[in-house]
Amino acid sequence: MRSAQPPRWRAAKPLERSTSVVAPGKRAAIAALLQPGETIQWIGTPDLISTLRTQLVLWWVGLPWTAVALTLYFVGRISESWTPFVVVPGLVFVAAPFVMMLYADGTVYAITNLRAIIKHDAVGKKQTVSVPFADMDERLEILPVRPGIGHLYFASGMSTKLSNVDHTGKLAFREIARPEAVAQLLEQIRAQWKAGGSRTP
Image 1: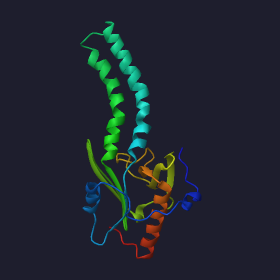
Image 2: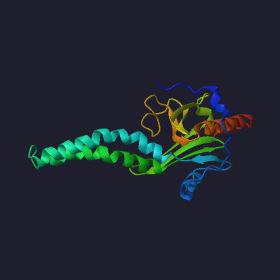
Image 3: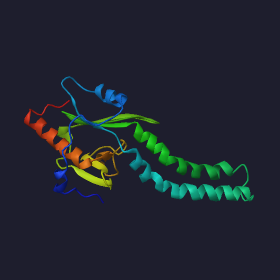
């Protein structure tokens, strides 16, 4: 069960705005979504190594499955006609972590002066999710993945059919570096938005 991160994450080293290094094409993809007067305050991407590591558990299923299936084939326990049906599921499990890493590589996150944006432009799925500050949770949550990497949850009640939404309907920037600092920056930008008249896109 995920619990709200205690206030201590606010003590993170400040994160400067608009300084994250991302591919120019990804920055341009976010820029194309902006409305007049809207500016990028932070931009980032999932940590690909963390994405791969969290999916490697699938190998514990795929590798033994494939090994057993091939062994049964070579000793003549399964016919040639049935081999694809037995071997392919194992290969799917083996390949899945790399497919998920490619999917994450096509994802870019952004915080503007008006909203949070998650844009997917990857294998098998193209999708953009936008959440204005007015629709965000009052309290942000962080779920650590490994040192320096975590999920930053910022909106509830979202459709579970959307990417980056968990089974409870919570939306997150998943597997980002320095999630505490990003959360602190998001809080600051939201506060400035509220003080400036609360315009929504």
